[in-house]
Image (tube, rainbow, N blue to C red; front, side, top):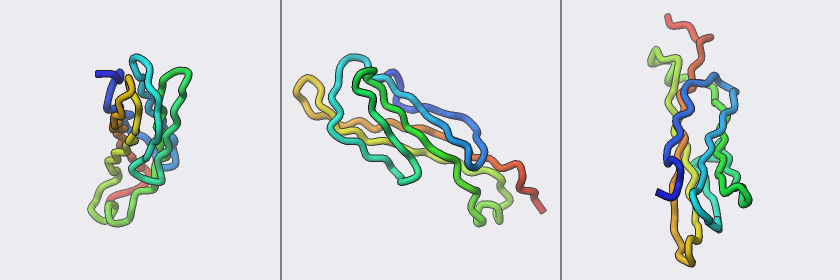
Length: 108
């Protein structure tokens, strides 16, 4: 596997908290493009370090989830990279997993 990991579980965060997942490429790669799964996630490629950083800021818990009696939501964001490795175009999908929890929500 050319990456140190394909999934980065970032644990539990609060709404409005920002987290980042870091993925290191083992070897040399040229990134042609990066697409994230949602506008709420960001991705940045560091050419020198051969490192991808995916960032996400916890959203507020939607009312429909609160109505179900839950004070958390599970979020998975991914970045799809189009790359060139040894003159061959390859695509990779790297993911971050987050649990957004809001202890300020009280159940009825």
